[in-house]
Length: 296
Image (cartoon, rainbow, N blue to C red; front, top):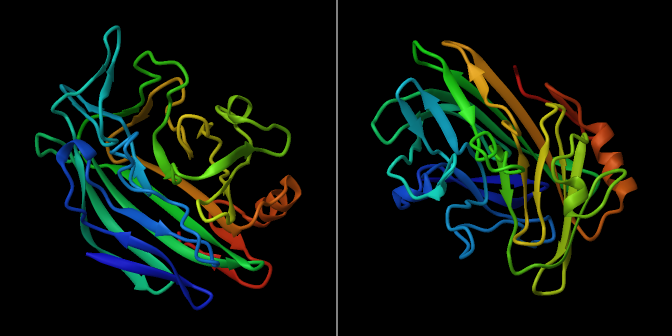
């Protein structure tokens, strides 16, 4: 099942709800292709370098309940004092029902199901396509709820001993074939400088194989560090568990929101900042002409 997001009269993203994927990909809903209003694709699915990367998705590498550990990211699991290991612990996300369906807005409920059939988490997710100053923005909100009667721990490779690998949560995989990649914030540039930053926004720019430039500006007020890659592969995401696990007691909820400007051309830091200051959390995005609210 797929749905299409539209903005400014154009199809800008396809949302695959129930992908038929190998279990070690941690099957989950994803957005791909995502395109600029000019038609340039800015996502990739199952690239050769990381076949479990799925366009734009929400994924967590380490989800633990008492006696059980699940991988909802895909690929190998980082084991303390042993390194990455391919384990039979991959979970998947299953669509439970719609909250709302419109051309520029999709909301649904999901169950996060472990390899043993248990459901440690349920999620409510909303994705919106919002016009902004000749471009458009993807507004994604995820609310995770611990539906068990025990604590659920959200972790990462970093919390298991691999420093700097705190990835988990919202993640955007850009195309590997793009060149001229540049990552920057308001006061830093380059992967090493922006990786791990808690800046309110981070940008990734590149050039598609056909020569067209693009820029993505990621804005969040959640305070998580940014996980950024530009050398090995192009990608940006949140790091929910950058150094320490996140504990969710029974019935508790974790809300995260990222608004991503999807722009044609190479934007400057000043351009990116102009977008970021218009983006408010947790409930609103001021587009300069329209205001969109999440209803939460």
